[in-house]
Image 1 (cartoon, each protein chain N blue to C red):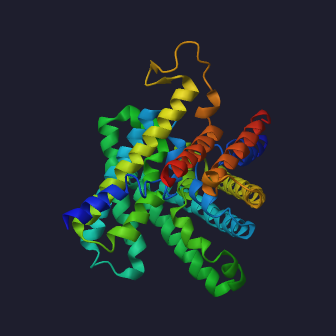
Image 2 (cartoon, one colour):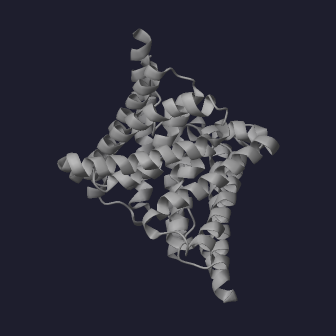
Image 3 (cartoon, rainbow over the protein chains, first blue to last red):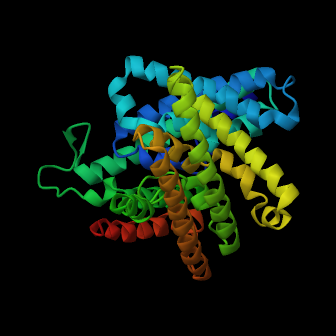
Length: 197
Length: 191
């Protein structure tokens, strides 16, 4: 049993790492990864919602009639999203302003709903918790990496520290919309190459 | 009148919902492999987004703001969108079966399309009037359809060519989307 829980946790970190292996929840991935910090902040907010909703859905899985399960899941998720929204407003106001409408939009992040539907509604409490935690950390890592790549190439620094030295000409394209698509596409390609070995 | 024209044109081209605002990227990647599915999805989005934009504006102004319960906005909007989608599905099935057959499987997917929810939230955030909120919702929906259909066309051609293994499918798709987004940046000179 202990081994399978570890497996549920680990698959989110590499085998099924969102958003690369499971192409879900792309909007925040593209929108907030202009800096590494924003990416990680968004990742952590999503992780919180993912873990909480996975736990609650798993506890209630025998009480939710299957016909109306999706609206039920959405209400559960929306509740936790409002919680995150209020918490961030209180404790991380700068990040809250930076992420803007993408915090309420966690509600429609297909990754969260997808895990509730595909995993938590069919599994017990502890594996669901592990799944939520693994997926959440995987998501945070991906956002952090993508944010770091875009920020370092687009502005030449990460959180105010020069990365490539003073002679580096910032590649502004990377922090604009097209750069987001191209960077994600190329990272996906690198993941495919690494995954083959 | 001039303001409204500028609003509509800039919402379709300059602030294109997918390529400049990053909303609705999941269906953009997910339903663009074939032209047919792209057209079906665009139709469904235009339909639902127009209705959702109108209804959420009314609910926000006369209910959430009037009763000072704005913190419930997220849950209220998602419930409106989810039930609207369900209602539209039932209505179309009964009265316009041909349209239902066309949109079919795309309707339920719209509930989790961030473009719909995103536009409703943006309308509230920018404090638009009723008329401009409706017009902007329609314009954003048209922009969504335009980008999706253009992208599907490009992607069908790209898939005919021989792509290097690791770049296949989603990867090359995203890079292509980046090129398309670059083309849309060119529209910034229009207004």
